[in-house]
Amino acid sequence: MIKSVVRRDFKKLDKNEEISKIFGYIYGESPLPIIMDGKNPWGIIDERRLLKRKLSGNEKVKNFVVGVPKLDASYSIEKAREKMVEGGQPFIIVTYGGGLAGYITAVDISIKIGVGKAGDMMKEVEPLNENDSMATAINRLKQVNEAVLPVTKEDKFVGVIRIRDVLRLETTHEKIRDYRSEKTSPLDAPVKGFMETGVRCVSPEAREEVIKIVDKQGFAIVCKNGEYMGIINMIDLVK
Image (tube, rainbow, N blue to C red; front, top):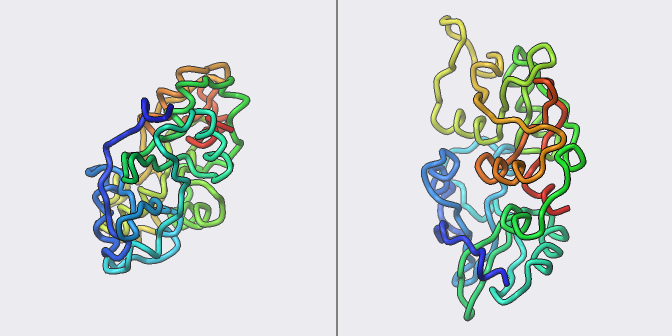
C-alpha cells in the first residue's frame, strides 16, 4: 500500500493565496506546497507556468497550479505508478479517511519496483554552452518541456540551469557570480554565472544510484568520461 511510503513534509496553501507564499519553496527554504480548493487537495505548483509570466508577487496561486492524481492510502504501489504515468506528473496526493495524508513521488515508487539502466531511461536534451546568455537559457526553458537544462564546456558537463534558478533571479534580484564587474543586464550575462555546479553525474550503466540522486537533486545527469549524454527527470523513473 502507498500508505507505507507517504511523505508528510508539505504545507497546505489555499488556491486564492498570493503567489509570493510559495517563494520559500522555490528558494529551497520550505516544504512542498499542496494547493487546496477549500478543504479539498487540488494540485501542485507548475514551475513552467511561473516561468512564462513576470511575477510581481501578488498573483493568485490558482493561476499556476497543475492538478495531480489523488489516491487513497490503501491503493497499491502499482496502481499509483499507473496513475502517475497517466497524469504525467511525478507526484500523487494521498488521502486517508477523507482528508489529506501527504504525497508520494516517482522516487518512492521506483524504490519499490526498481529501475532500469540510466542509459535506457535518459532523454537527450540539448545542452547549453556555459557562454550562452541567460536570455538564451530562459527562451530554451520556455520552449522545451523541461525544468532543468544541462550546461557544457567543450562537451564536458559543468552544471545545470533550472527554472528555479531563473525564478530566484527574478524574485530576489540575485547577484551574478563569476562575471565582469561592469553594469549589464542579467539577460546578457553568461549562464556560467548562474548555473548550479557540484551536480552529481551517473554512468549509463547505473541503476539504484540513479534513484538516490534523483531523490536528492530532482533529476540525474548521465555522463560518460565526463561528457554529457542525457538527463533523467523524476517521472522518467516510472515510465
